[in-house]
Length: 372
Ligand SMILES: *[C@@H]1O[C@H](CO)[C@@H](O)[C@H](O)[C@H]1NC(C)=O
Image (cartoon, rainbow, N blue to C red):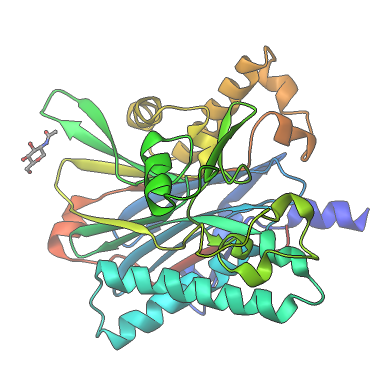
């Protein structure tokens, strides 16, 4: 009973730090509808944001954060697999590494700053796995996709491992039209280019990608080729007992099969760049880039993230010939048969602030609560 009450009142995101988000007022603006948790609207350094998450797994495997400070804005969407631990670790450590590296670099953000933050996070997690190996060997088989966006001055950096995605809504001419432009590169074996890359890296391994029950998987085991964690696919010493047999490779691993090296791109922001949709794979499984951009464009900013999650859930229900109202009644865990955990963060770009180089408001730090 107490557990149920705690669950009802537990927050999805926590404001961090002394002055974080105006002293924690944010919690009052957060709403919950069953397994859906959302913040209709809030302010970050360069405009307004909207965020939402819906849980499908027994334990939420998605984590996310928005941080803004003098450097600009940092957004992270972490989609865990095999368990929540790697995504939680990333949510707890990646931004700290980014801040430390940034301080050493005198506050200058580059693609390398972000790459080093990813690799240090990977190193830290690998160390944790080695420390826990004798008691919690399953930590070797948990991993997380990791999508990061950094807005610094007038440039947007996007770094990604795995299959989360960020899509830009860009105004076209003066007609009120909008274009959807995908900014992230994905690493899922269902993409021909990813299979090609894997085959080139492992020319002597005919089993590097295997089609299993209609889904392409790396070594017949996992869909993504890059992640933080999944150390059983990176270091031979973790690909052995007591790790569960379904994760163990039949032959010796001579080189890492997966990597934590992110694909990174940078984009100078232009006045016709209207908003960014960051979301875990769970959203894109049911909504196209165009549809998502259209939904945000045609409605008020407030509630955008929730609207996208609901549109995806409606589509998931439709595919199963169910009503959305019936889907909503299905509890977590069983929900996973209908859709995945879904995280959405929409950032609206205020070009008045961006072009003046002004960072609005106090530093902001919103992170997933870890008690889920
Ligand atoms: C957006 O604006 C830039 C310059 O500000 C222009 O070069 C570009 O063509 C515009 N894009 C669209 C899709 O209208």
